[in-house]
Amino acid sequence: MTTLSDVLETTALERVASGFVFTEGPLWHPDGFFYFVDVRSNVLYRMVLGQPAEKVRDTLGGNGTTFDLLGRLVNCEGDGRRVTRTESDGTVSVLLDRFEGKRLNRPNDVICHSDGSLLFTDPSLRVPLAERELDQAGIYRIAPDGGVSLVAKFEYPNGLALSKDERTLYVANTRWTQYIHALELDASGNMVRRRVFADMSADGTNGVPDGMKVDEAGRVFCTGTGGVWVFEPDGTRIGIIETPEVCANISFGGPDLRTLLLTASTSVYTVRVRMPGLPHPWYKVRGS
Image 1 (cartoon, rainbow, N blue to C red):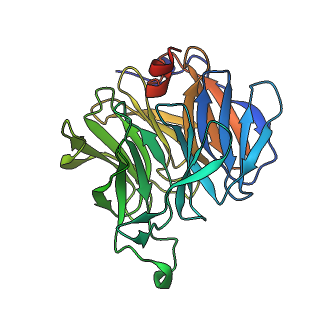
Image 2 (cartoon, rainbow, N blue to C red; image 1 turned 90 degrees about the horizontal axis):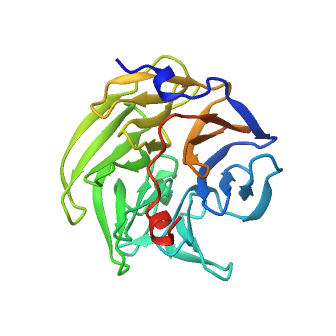
């Protein structure tokens, strides 16, 4: 039976940055630094481990981040009700802010498929009812040609992660019932069926299902009550990496992708793991 000691190389978390309001959106850049955001302060940062974090730009409620296949930074900006992209010259453009002519609710997390499509969550609960234009909270797909489609409707979709073969899309449901859903996808990225992958309901208020990542062994890491919950590929819970603050998101990084960065409220922490995380598709295109 796998235990946390089989997953973790080091057991103590190292706090590598602090003084923020609510950190989110961690993302490893193969040039040797992490991106992350301070959601409440509306700032995107970059940080080389061991050095102070540097401000990149202001955001409108910046949250989840990823790269596209050209290495451009994509950011969900909840307060702006939009998904943005930072171009190669540093300018920021709106990638998407409407679906079928209606304003998005509050884009939260975004990931990139190896075919170049982007998947993002758009929960609706925190948008006042009078300001909602879309009837549903959901997961959307931006195709490489720019076409946008609704993948699935959800209660409160939050963090996203793909399995290694990209045929399973994991979705963290944050409010009401706390769980991870597994959506089976066909070769075109359409949902075939869905099932509950893991129940994450727990007593306590120090964390909810939110950011997720998958490692090379297929294990799923998801923030939740008490810290980061780790599951076997079949949904069996291995254990919880406990955090001293509410942890909202995580990212594998470092040259070997075995440094787990945790964005947890006012701080950012790291811990070393034994198995690398799945590489972003752009890393492979880039040759890093």
